[in-house]
Length: 345
View 1 (cartoon, rainbow, N blue to C red):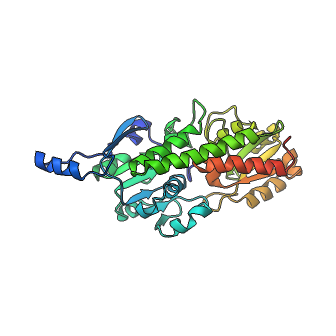
View 2 (cartoon, helix red, strand yellow):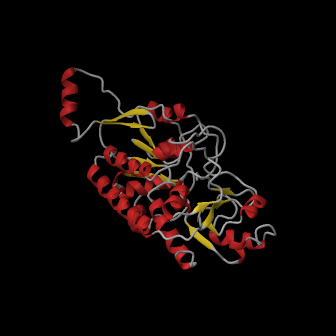
View 3 (cartoon, rainbow, N blue to C red):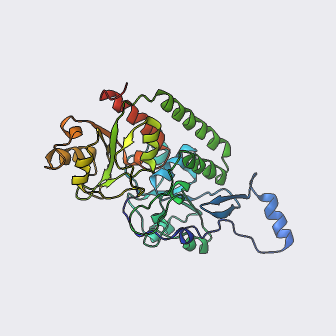
């Protein structure tokens, strides 16, 4: 889920960018530039329906969302990052040392001015509203500044029109995350690292699928907000978790990414398990897992739910509930916590 819902621009507006710029000058200048090009460049690919060309590996990239940042760090690209922003949780422990060396432009969304002060040559984002009107900056604005940009393919596979976090007309598959890793690795000239990272994640997902032994468990996924909670619909990151482990999401009848649903409806669905976002950011109410549990036990509507009375809570970081490399960690963590609750065969 994105940090703060804003009106997202349409896909055509969000993705109207061409990363590669054609140099002007004589034929001799063009030949010299071609000879000096990095091996394997230029790179051309399609990002969210647009053909993109990158003429050289970025050297001063800024990642505007945690999911994108953790992919770049996992690819060993910390020395190419000029800044990061919009964090829900601490970085993965294995990436902490590299992350310490990178300026954090903002814990939440930075201003456009703060972004540009970092003098980026490339900008990545995990959410369409980051690049939308009312977000940090648009790809069109970056294009005019001769700065390349890239949006997560997982975000492009849904309708981002209107308020909120969008709606999907098909289920998100883990392959979209592998595609993001592979494409970013190509853009930064480290394709082999990308292939190695994808292979590792695929192996872990295969192991999790083979070991899955959930015993007819129903669940809901609560990201944040106590007054009008954001709960996962059928088809985003939590959908990957549910399908992999054989869990029934009690709100799989909505295609919205994170619909806001009242507590009376939640209590009526009465899932076996409550998967709670344990966020460290400070943006909305009931961010931490502890705050969510306290609310559920004190609210007269929710405290009578079976899962609440029996302390059947599964805690995940906010990053694990968003489509990213953390989705693999989420599958493993949910499986382990269900076993601890005695809800597996």
